[in-house]
Image 1 (cartoon, rainbow, N blue to C red):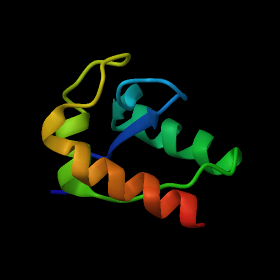
Image 2 (cartoon, one colour):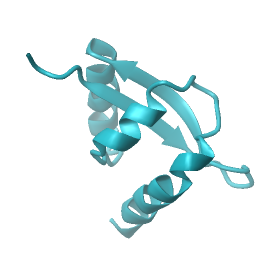
Image 3 (cartoon, helix red, strand yellow):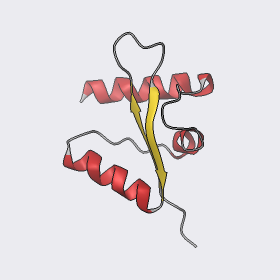
Length: 81
């Protein structure tokens, strides 16, 4: 049995208290999120643990404090590209 694909997209607008979840998806919705990211040159970082936490949140919510460090590492990596 294969695992269900999951994806979460984040935004961190200037002046925001923390990054927020712009969308999440599972299965076909996750594939669509990843396809849109690829088509628009948006970097994708694979982190199964992080996406499991983010995918149970609602779009528009700030990321949970428990994942601040992991998300900071993702943003640092993306900025280094």
